[in-house]
Amino acid sequence: MASYARSGWPLDGTAAFHAPDPAAVDLAATDGPSGADDAPASEGISRRDLVGGLEKGLAVIEAFDQDKPRLSISEVAQRAGLTRAAARRYLLTLTHLGFMHHDGRQFALSPRVLRLGQSYMHSSRLPRVIQPELHKIAYALQEASSAGVLDHDDVISVAAASAGRLVSATLQPGTRVPAYCTANGRVLLAALPQADVDAWLVRQRLRPLTPHTITGAERLRVEIARVRAQGHALVDQELELGLRTLSVPLRNFRGEVVAAMNLSVHAARMRPDELLDRGLPVLLQAQALLKPLL
Figure 1: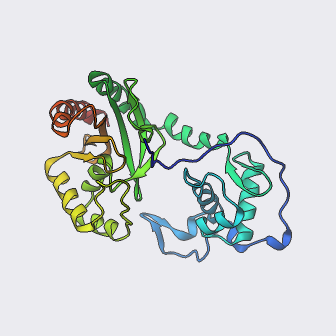
Figure 2: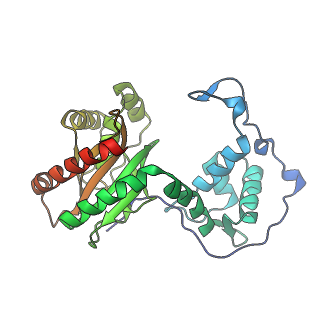
Figure 3: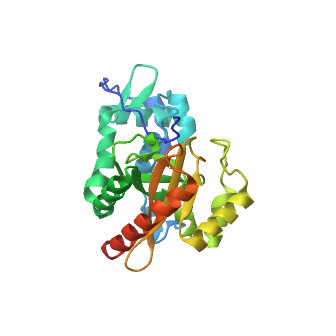
């Protein structure tokens, strides 16, 4: 079964660090972001308060994914929006710190990058609170269950459980999948104000990942509105052939949607109507139990 989750490919090994050529020094690597001013970067934060070097270093790490686990300096520069000289310096610095490995021509992430994700998983309350309910769902129905949060155009899985049946590699914690063709994604999009959904749709490239994927913006807008009205989303083989998923929103005690939780099955094991009949009551029960805890 094909997987469209995006995650880095950590490689073992270390490499010697070589100081960059002084001629390669680039102003893009200075502490302040280029063009910093008083314009807000996000709510309550001014651009002049940001550290541009950290911002660009993280962009270099994010340039690597499942489709491109090994990248040259030029490829990193293009993906991260940097000059080649700046990309080289960031890559060498990350290699020196142990977050990167290179073979003399291409770079790849090292296992040390996992520390960044582990810091979230160990410190955040959300995965710890949700995980027991995911186990209950998975073992009650002998299928797989996961929870995710919206991150720009994608959904990142923050917790998952399986009853031992292989359903999809996209359900593991830390995996990233497109929001437009996943049940968790549509539930999270439905929680946004309509103006935000419209703006989100404008910037999307709706690729047909399977013959079932909705690729029309207007049709997707209608589907998100349907999810908002009914309180759950059922996505049938739009991300992967054979993957059928039902999702509900997770709200905190104030009624705010903080995550989405799903039940995923293989299409050969359960029809859509069976998934709704068997899965929705279990998900809604878990939703109610989690609300006062989130």
